[in-house]
Length: 110
Length: 155
Image 1 (spheres, each protein chain N blue to C red):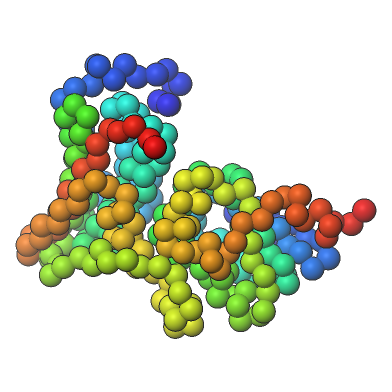
Image 2: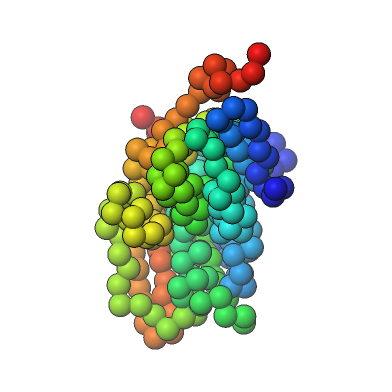
């Protein structure tokens, strides 16, 4: 487990909390490593992320590729308005739609 | 907001110039980005505009480090911020061998690029979308990108 991603798993769900404020050339490789261990429903949590550039987008796309190969679903959570704009600009939101934290409640153990 | 939380008086910043020279190591792109945020705040850009500025500069500096200087030790990336009233001009120069052209055409994620593993190449497209003006000049002594952003009201 890397320190840059904090994993939370329940049932078929993995929530990957990105602990780095920057998803950039420095952090991209460590973040992308986590795409090897996805779950049928994987959620990337961007609540701590204040900056994403194209190197970061490339790392995030590795999750998209991995999810497509496995038939898994990939979502993004707590994405800032600026990053929502960027995701739409490159059409990444097609492959990693937004999800709200309360949408995951049904999957959590009682 | 500036690092100390004190709002800038935009009237204090009319015609100013800030220069940085960084080694060709991506770690120092973060230094330029932090400086860009401060300059954007100083000129009175909105929070959203500062985010656009940070991303555009990040892409330009990473291009200079990776494709211009090819991360060679000893080659520097020069960044000049010039504030002129409501206009911010940023010039990012590398010491590489120059390029024939930079592709700013629209680049989006699609099924084909995912299948083929082409997961890079968004940088110039993002810059062209986020700034008001973009110029490129290149010779065998290096490449310079000039970005211009204007202070404006957000819709």
